Image (cartoon, rainbow, N blue to C red; front, side):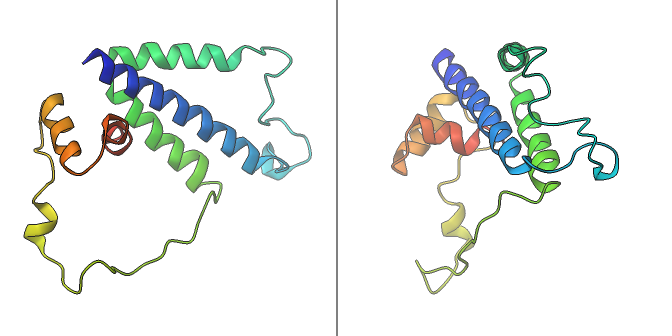
Length: 145
């Protein structure tokens, strides 16, 4: 369980840091502040001079919070998505639509290999292994549920 928690915690922290970096890069050049004025009250590098260790501080606080309550990670990822990506308009990509692996859809077949609602870790790992996935895939696919 400790290995899973460590993998999960690492993935969440990396996801948040990468997301924040991408968000900052996406918003670089946008005018922050009241009504898009040129005052630049807020900007991604706000603490660069006054508190250069801000990222390390935030990461350590997040790690402690997630260790106390692992659900915090999912809440933060969802909040970050809505506030930083959906509200800013990016990132986006073209999603090809259309099912090509079958001409029919079967509710029974599609739900056959879904894990039980409250499985233990070993059952989850076994279910994912049957699909050719490993523990990293397990964390990535179920970590924010």
